[in-house]
Structure formats: structure tokens, C-alpha cells
Image (cartoon, rainbow, N blue to C red; front, top):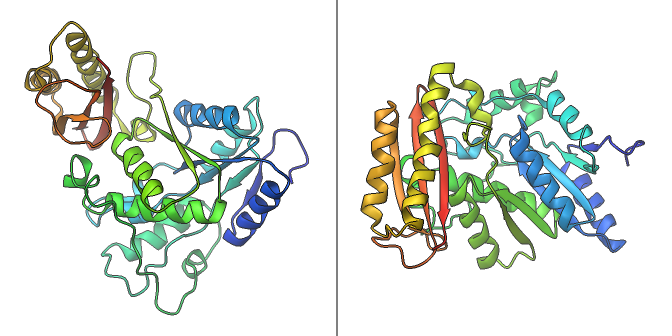
Length: 321
């Protein structure tokens, strides 16, 4: 264990991580897991606070998951600052007990994923450690070939333009759950479809884990916090405010009686298009099933994915009327 009240223990080996978690649970302590891809911001820290509120101990995983990137997406540009992440965790008023920082959780040897090479090299570069490429991969005889799919929930919205994304997310999160064996796992609602996919996976596969969705954290100007925001140029960031602005307008319209989802979508689309955003999708869907709805007669969420410059941003707004 760490020797101070603030320094988390860093574990990189999955067997050691499982051993630690089982030892803590054998003492009657509850364990919370906050899965992240690093480059932590206030949104991540709010998830950690939520874990502290619900459990005795908190594990933060930092792992850039290659499996959720398609060959056309540049894995190597995903921002990383492991040292900075540790400093942020140490500054928290409540201790993070463990940082689980595995080298790699999926062996792509003999797998037909086209970005295998960039996956391994990317992990070694981002970790900033003097490791050979081979040391970043779990050694198996023939590579991994098992994937977890949540077939219906993964199809729409982000699943249309990122067809391997949720397969990669669900598989690695399932592995994290099997390794850490948490009582509670906390995810942000900004990745709304991801949250519902994970919750459905946990239900369907009988994981004994409570999956919590934590509210979106926004900057003072309304922009949803994201590690990718660092790549926005100043003028792009200003234009990106059209996303949250339009979502708040749509929610206000719904609260005033507008239940026609087409009208709400058009309100959001007009504002974002006017700011020069390239829209991937704007959808009004049921909060649980993620199925598109025409009129609001149950809790819905407006989900948006849009590009400003080279940066793809997602955001959403729950409407409970």
C-alpha cells in the first residue's frame, strides 16, 4: 500500500490488481472502479468523488483502449499525460487507493484488426516508458479473439460511424471488471450510449456490479469537458459552444411544451450548422432503449456528435418531462 495519505499505489499487473481487490473485499471493504483513458480533467475527478461517496476504496484505471479505435482513427494522437494524471489524483482531498495502469489488455496477434501495429507502438509511446514493443503485449500462443457485443444498443448513433467502437469498449470494460472485481463502477453520462451499453452488458452477463452514471461536467462557458478539447483551436472551441447552447435551448423548448422531436432536432441542427460544425448525428432517443422517438411522452435524451476542425465532440441533454 502507499506510504502517505495521498499517493495511490500503482499496479500494472492484472494478477496483482485482482489479488489486491480480493484482499480488500475479504476485509469487508467495498471497491469502486473509475475506468478512464487518462488525460484526466474535472469530469473524471467528479467520477472519483462519486465513487468515494459510494464505496470504501477507489481504483482508477488509466488505459487507452486500442480496441475502440478503427483503422481510420489516429490512435497515436489521443492525448496522454500519466505523470500529470498522478499529480491530479494526489491533489484530491480523498485518497485514490490504486491506479491500475496495465500495459495492454488485448493481444492482437493473428487478429484481423488492421491497426494492430499502431496499437502496440501507440501504447509504448504514450506510456513514455523505455519498453520494447513486445513487452507491451500479453504473450499468448495465438492472440485474443473473443469480443463482447451488445448488439442492439451499439447499432445507432456512434455505432453507425464507429462500427468497432462499442465492441472494443464492452470487451475491455468486461476485462477490467473481471480483473478489478469492483462493487461499483462509475461512468460519465457524457458518453451516454457507452453508459447504456455497459449497463446492459452488466445486466445480461450477470456481473455483480452497480454501474453508476455521473452527470456531465461542463466548463464555465458550457462546453462539456473532454480530453479531446485540448485539440480544439481557439476559434473552433468558440464555435463548439453551439453544441451545448443548442441543447439547452432544446431542453427549454421541451419544458415549455414542445414535444415534437423533429422540431427539437431542427433547432439543434440549425444552431450547430450555423457555427460551421460538421454533424455526425443529432438524435432524440428514449433514455433506456436508445430508440428514436417522434414525440416526448417518456424520458428522452438528445444526443449529438459533431466535428469542429479535426475534433469529434459528443454531448447530450436529458429531458425528463
